[in-house]
Length: 446
Ligand code: ARG
Image (cartoon, rainbow, N blue to C red; front, side):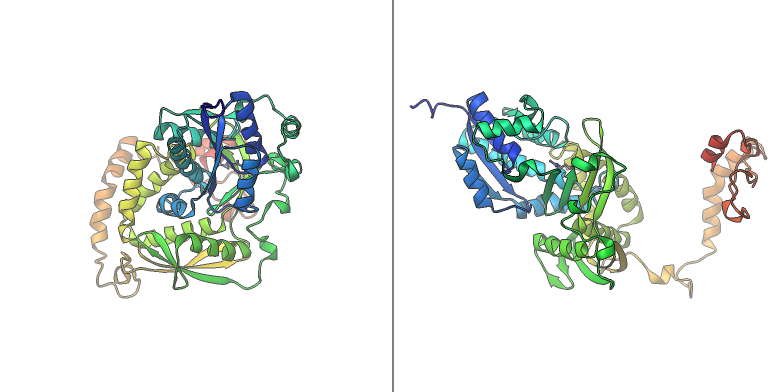
C-alpha cells in the first residue's frame, strides 16, 4: 500500500467558492487527509456544476460527488416546511435551514461509501449553518468526527485567507470583490454581511436578483391559481406541475411583480442578532396560499393548535434539530392535518404585494348557509343566548368577587396623548393611571 492510499479520508461539503476551496487545501496540508468533495444541487445559481467539479479536482480531491438534490429537497424538505407554514420569527421561510440537513444526509452517505471517518464544512463559528450541519451529522452517525476548518484556522481576515489561497494555488477569481455572503436554493436566497451589517442602511439595490423592485414592477396586476392536493402544490393555473418546476415558475412570476423581499433582524442560534435580507417570492406566495386553504379546510381547534406548533417547528428547524424526535413528532401532526387540504387558491400580485383573492375546496368546512347574514334558517340565533350565559359565568363570578368598581375602566383621555378632537384616540384606562407624570405607564395601559 502506498503512503497516499493509507491516508485517512474526509468528506467536505464543497460549493466551489473561496472558503470551501481553501478548506480542501487546508485539510490536505494541515490535517494530512484525503478529501472527497460533495457538491449538492439544491437549485442554487451556479456557473456550471462541471466547472466546479473540475475546480475541485484541480485542488487535488480524490473524488467529487455532484448530487442533484432538487427533487429530494422538494419532497422531503419543502413539503414538510410548507405543511408547517414555516416562518422563523414569523418572517423567514428557512431557506438555508432546510438545505443543510439534506446536504448533511449526503455527506454522511458519502462518508460511508468512501470509508471516511471525518466530515468537514466551510461554515464560520458565528453562523447557524455550522449548528445545522453538525447536529444533523451527529444524529445521523454519532461515530463521525466533524472538522470545521474556518473555525479552526487562523486565517481570520479575508486578506489572510486570500494570501493562503494564492500561496496554495487556489484560484481566487472575483471572490475578493464579493461584498456579501450569499446562500440560495429553490426556496429562496439569503444575503448577509457587507453594507447590510448596518441595520439602518437601506439594502443596496444590487443585492436582489430574484425580485424586481416594487416601483419597477408592472402597472397591471397578475393573478395565478395554485392547486393543492393534501397540502402539496400540484398545479399553476390548472397546469399540473412537479413541485420543483412550480416553485421556479412562481419565483419568476411573484419576483417579477416585486413580491418576496424580506429585510429583518434575526436572532441566531449562537445568541447574536444579525441583519439579514432574503428573497423568497415563491416560498412566501405558497405559504400565503396554503394558509388560506387551511383556513377553509381545517377544523377550528386543529387550526389553532397548528398555529402554535408551527412556531415550534420553525424554531426547531432553524436551530438545526431537523432529525430530532420532537421535530419528527411534529411532522406527524402536520402531515395528519394535511389530509383534507385540497383545493385551489387565487393569488393576486401587484407592485410588491400578494393578496389572496379567492379559495375553494371540495373539503371546505365553510358553510354559506351558516355564515350568511341573509336568510339564516340553519343557525338558530336564540342558541347564542345560552352560549353567552354559560361562557360568561366564570367572568361574572370573578367580577362580583372583585367589587363593582374595581374592574371598570373609565373612558378618560389623557390630554397629552389625545390627538386632534380625541375621537380616534380614546384609550380606556383606570382613572389612577391617567396622569401626565406617568406617560410610560399610560402607554402600557393603552
Ligand atoms: N441567517 C440565515 C439562516 O441562518 C441565512 C444563512 C445563510 N448562509 C450563508 N452562508 N450566507 O438560515
